[in-house]
Amino acid sequence: MSRNDQLFERASRTIPGGVNSPVRAFRSVGGTPRFIQRAHGPYVWDADDTRYIDYVGSWGPAILGHAHPEIVRVVQEAAVHGLSFGAPTEGEIEIAEVIAARLPSIEKVRLVSSGTEATMSAIRLARGHTGRNKIIKFEGCYHGHADSLLVKAGSGMLTFGNPTSSGVPEEFIRHTLVLNYNDLASVEAAFATHGDDIACIIVEPIAGNMNLVKPAAGFLEGLRTLCTRHGALLIFDEVMTGFRVGPQGVQGLTGITPDLTTLAKVIGGGMPVGAFGGRADIMDNVAPLGGVYQAGTLSGNPVAVAAGLATLELLAKPGFYEFLSRQSATLANGLTERARAAGVSFCADHVGGMFGLYFRDAVPTTLDEAADSDIETFKRFFHAMLDKGVYLAPSAFEAGFVSAAHDDAVIQETLDA
Ligand code: PLP
Picture (cartoon, protein in one colour):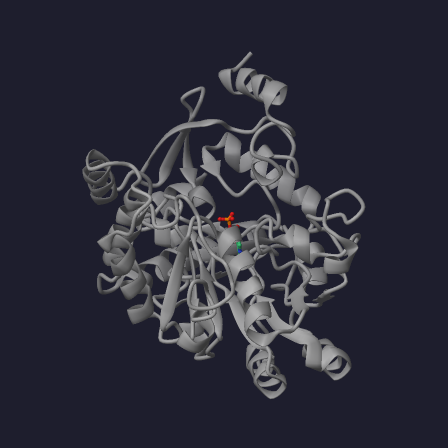
């Protein structure tokens, strides 16, 4: 029995659902999850010491590649001075300043420890600021386990909450309107019916949790216009896209200004840092200035913040995002060429350091189209690549990630696999 198999068996004895479920458990592709024991640059090694070229990137954070020497250095240096103080630090101010300086939509920012906390906090803040209850979210957009509060039972394949068993009060669930991504007409209709009670729209401005679905022309602009017209807040959940698709996330690519932005993943460089920020008049509703309570034992943790700050500094190097875009384009185009030559219905899309692979002829623009990608072929492709030493996201509905460590030789090795 391989060590991976042994660990899988052991995990199911004490961890409900096996290992950190649902996404990491290989549920959707089948087979034994790879337990990773070490990682360096673009590579990860599993418990049987098999090496893989990694395109999961720790589900997004590893934008510099694994174990980047500068991040290791600052983490060690910070740890020597104490792991956690439960008191304010200068690092917390510095990272808030860097985020606010880089993203023009953000005047003030609060640190938390994950993307979920960031989205939960932004939604609570939007409700507190507007005094309204209802939330618009889009099916297939994932906002962490905040989703268990947001989705309706039976609302689709990415349903994380079930009101009959999740402990979420019906009352709360009724406050969420789950609409279709890229369907502006349904948003207009929702405002026509519930306009006075809609606190916010929360959206992944490029949806990386439906594989990779980009906003249709006019969709984000339309959301901005409707929110402004009806006094609701527009929340861009840039937990995945922030500092990943470009230096200013999707808001930088599109020029559309959200009222609030949520961040995590890249801003922690692999350590737990999340953040939510936006206009000062909204952010000032956070306690103790306002009534929206926000606190966390490890928020602004000095070791995590040190990793985040060092990462953000390295991302500011000229040409960084051009490099990422080039590598993800070469990968996406190379895979498409090879798949089509083999007669497979396949296409790929990319933006900055993110890419999506689809077993269908055209890049999807809706959740239904994304779901129409041939899942069985994806599973076979995933396992074939794994056997050849390439570790793709074990889900047909997750974007893949390239890092600064994915140089030309690594991309070529992938294409040759
Ligand atoms: N929002 C988006 C867009 C995400 O992709 C994720 C995680 O994948 C989250 C929120 C939740 O972040 P976390 O897993 O850090 O709680």
